[in-house]
Every structure is written in C-alpha cells, then in structure tokens.
Length: 181
Image (cartoon, rainbow, N blue to C red; front, side):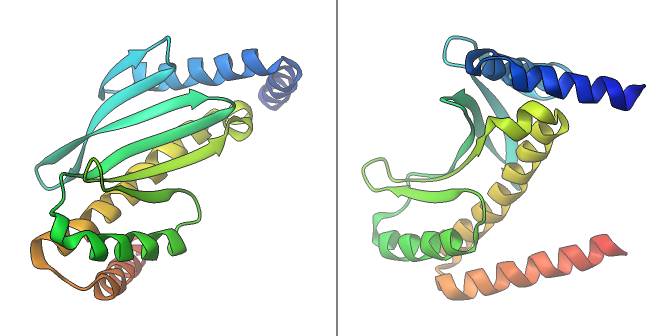
C-alpha cells in the first residue's frame, strides 16, 4: 500500500504544471529545514534559504539554497577576500576542481576577491524523490568542505595547486576506506 501511495504521489507531481512543481519542491525544502536543528532564514519571495554551517575548523560560512527557473542551486562563498598575489594559483586550483567535479563549478571573482562553489540540479529528481533534497545538500556541503580545505592550504601554506589536489584525492580515498570498515 505504501509503494502504491508513493507511486501515485509521483504521478500527481509529474502531472501538475511547472509552477506548481517548483512550489512542491520549495515546500519540501522548507519542510526539511523546519524539521532540522539548523540555523537558517527563509526568503519566500526570492525562493531561497540561507543557512549557516561550519565549513572548516572554527570557520562558519553562509550557504544559500535557491529554486529558480526549474533548477535547484546550492551556493557558498568558499573564500572571501583572497590575497591578490595568489590569483593565478587560485585560478589553477579552481581549474583542477572544475575538471574533477561531476556536479558543480568553482568560480573566482577578481572584482569581489571571492571563490564560490555552486551546484545546479534540475528539480525533476527532487520533485519525484523527497530524500534527494537532503542528499543534494549533503553532497554540496561535503564537497564545499573539501574545496575550502584545498583553498586554505593554498592561501595558508602556499602549496602548489597540483600537490593540493593530489593530497585531497589521497585524503578522500583514505576516508572512503575508513568508512568501509
């Protein structure tokens, strides 16, 4: 009976118009945050949620989750006000990430001196499977932490971008092996 209800719910969600589909996903997103213990603010008119999470040791950052034009976007400023003398290395590190990432993009704004990580996903999967919203938030958050770690290593230790990426891949592999135990 439970499977039939889930199936019928999906059929209904697919049958409604685009605007209603976006509102259904928006309500699912708000419900997820309402049921959590996270600190957040909802902006109804713009359809986005701003939440604060710890991205590094003792370093909090604002994450933005927005529904717009049929897409769900997750955004975070990884670095704010980077040293201009490291601009070339920052671009190289961002290029390495953009070559590795399946979902999302790391962008650098010279004007604002920021590094941002953004993911963009069509709302259709989120519309059909409510648990996917949480999964998308979690994927974005975990990747953001890795990106933050890498850019901090570049800024704090002036490590070469290729070595940082190699260290990060090794770190991820070790964490995966540890989680399998």
